[in-house]
Image (cartoon, rainbow, N blue to C red; front, side, top):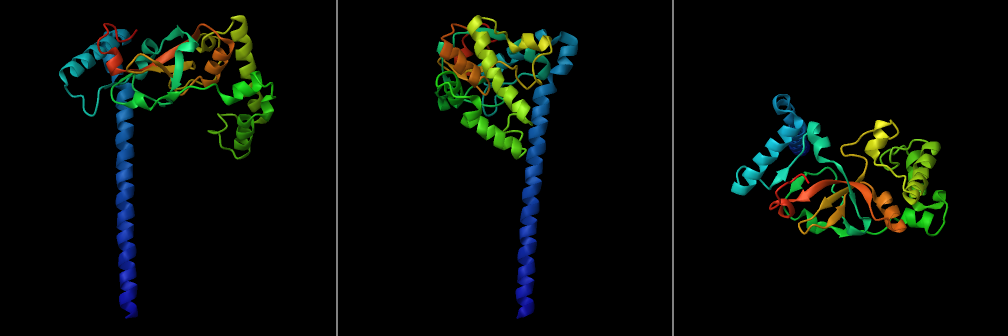
Length: 264
């Protein structure tokens, strides 16, 4: 009797072990496949660029994408155009937009440059960042804002993601001082795009996108704030500025499909 119970227990554990192993294998395969897709997206254009140059390669890839979309060829789950790493600077260019025209946000992370589907329907209304209103409207010291306290706690817990890369008290204070710098530069007309500061070696480490206010355009042509520039956009709106530097990182396919030039 006891042996039978033990045997069943071992069999159950063995079955669970097999299940966990299979799950782990599936997860590993999915992760590998996802990594392979990202690598292909980022680097597949390098080979063509050797022969055509990056700008012409971009035009060729975009023309091929247009043709596939028009004839519904190889579009898979949707019409999406990703930008290779060596082509990004020809796509993600700084333009000047009126902050008053940015009334939505979507926060999509790393996204295709052109994308169909209903992703834009998930947008929500943009509101000024609480930290900016506390500092510049209510005149509360930065160290007393919730964001400062949260980031300070994250530093203490060595949670570098939540601390936005700040690892010390000095770095945290310097981070919040940038809001004062941006407010001052916006006010006196001296604010410059991060791309210009990069050339002078003044900005922080490079990310996937340029360090500007990042925007998407929905199917109706509305601007939406992406994951970058919330504080700057809030300051610009607060000051009533008429234009600020920004980068468009995503456009809805239905917005752009009838336009002649999909890059501008």
